[in-house]
Image 1 (cartoon, rainbow, N blue to C red):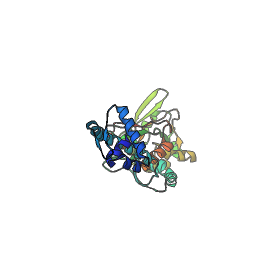
Image 2 (cartoon, helix red, strand yellow):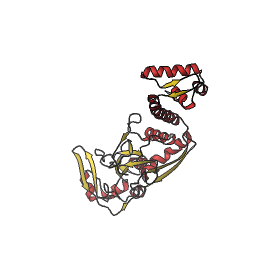
Image 3 (cartoon, one colour):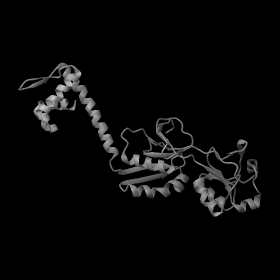
Image 4 (spheres, rainbow, N blue to C red):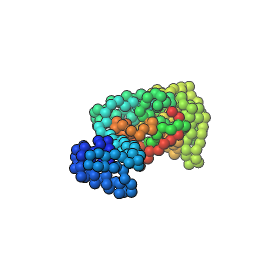
Length: 302
C-alpha cells in the first residue's frame, strides 16, 4: 500500500523506486501484488505515463488516511522511547506532599535530569484540567468526571497521643473513651466531628470534641507532641514520632478505615515521556501493588 501510494504521488515507478531505495521493477511488483490481492486494477500504465482507475483513485484516498494513522502510531512508539524532558506540574495534599512525596523527588530528578518539577501542595480539591496540572494526587473517593485514575496504596491514619497527655488524662481503653478526651480536630468533613474505628466488633463511630481544630497535620502534630490532645493523622507524619517515643499508639486492636488514594490525569493518547516517567515513578513508590495496579478511566470530579 505504501509503495502504491508513493508511485501515485510521484507519478512513476522509477521516481517511487528512487524515493524508496528500490528498483522500479520491484515497485511494479508491489503494485501488481496489491492489485492481485484486491482483485481490481488500480493503475493503468503505459511506457510513457500512468493514471489511476476510478477504484484506484478511491483506494488511494483511503490508503492515504490509513498510512497517516500508521505514521502516527509509529511516532507514538518513538515518543515513548524519547528522553523525558520539560516542565511537569503536580499537585498533592499537604501532608502527603511534605512527608511522603517530597523526600522521594530527588530520586526522580536524578533519574531524569531534563525534567523540571513544579509541586503545588493544597488540601482543597483542585481542577486538574482548568488549573493546568499534568498530574494530581487525590485522597478519598473519586466522584464524577472522565479523568484517568490509577490506584495507589490506601491512605492510613493512626490514633495516638503523647505519654504526658495520657498521664494527665488517664488511659484510653475503648473508642467510647474518646468522647471524653481532648481530640485534635482536622478541618475536614470526615475527621472534624466524628472518628470511625474498626475493631473486633466492627466499625465504631464516636463523636469527638476539642478546643483546637486546624487544617494542617503538621500543626496538629506539634500540639499532640506537646500533650494538648489525641491525634488521628496519616501514618507518614506520625510514625517518626512513634519511633522516638514522643507519641504512643492508642487502642492497638482498632484501626481507622483506610482512605483510597489515586493519581489522576487527563486522558491523552499522546502521553509525553515526562508524564509517563512520573506515573511509573509514583506507582513504584506509592502503588498498592506496584506492578499490579491497572489503569482505568474513573468518573471523578475535576
